[in-house]
Length: 331
Image (cartoon, rainbow, N blue to C red; front, side, top):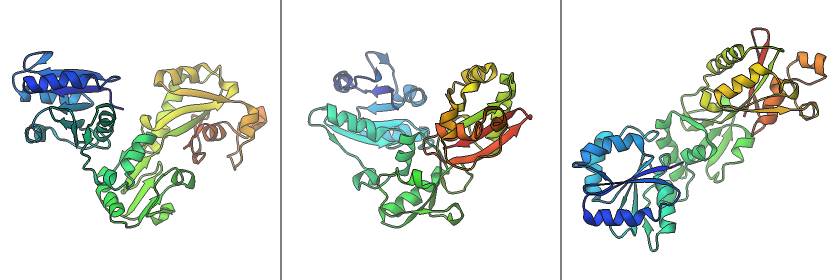
């Protein structure tokens, strides 16, 4: 989500426009750059590289050609470049120039168009103009990590040209896609170059990794260091990143387990506990568990991961670490 915005001006008229523009940017942290007031500079080249790395969005109130020339050396990729918008002096013409989707330029332009009287948003993104599904925006809304983004152009072009795009995922995820025109749900063994994969599995195609719920079971007195080591071994074995994990889940009998509590706190992860009735009410085949013997429970790692997950798909069966820790994953 955009929060920090830099407004770049070049002369007194654009500075006056910037002062007026700030009034429409309530809720954002805004800095004005000019040659005479606020954050002052002598040359655009002196401030743009710094602004590029420090702000979520840059709004330029100057000639679009000058903006293009000045930002060209700074361009890296659509995953990391900030949103760049160009606005005229009257503040009634808004052009999302760069990072329209992932960077949030289109979103910010829409916000300003609604707030500024008589403002017109010059969207140039084809998917927005044709109301075509943009997979990167779906991923952004859902908080999914994206891999193989260079494959996006082919997928977007196929959708724009009304050609079929195959989606390898689970029915529960496929159903949340609002515009499924020309999409076909396929199994994971049908993937080809015209496919999108939405699952936590390796692939060479356009790939979206949904957030996971991790279920953890452990013996009484297990240290946070052991749990941390097991957790990161689990992530590494499945090519996952810490950012892919939404929360940790377990059985309520572990709610006073010091090592587990300290681990979750150190990692900044939400920790949820479920009672026996809740976990035993879940349908499905779960791996044999010592919890059945000690607590008359279907399991800890698998049922708790499934219960805490958004789409109720158990992806990674229980794995045992150091004979004392069990870990499972669901989306």
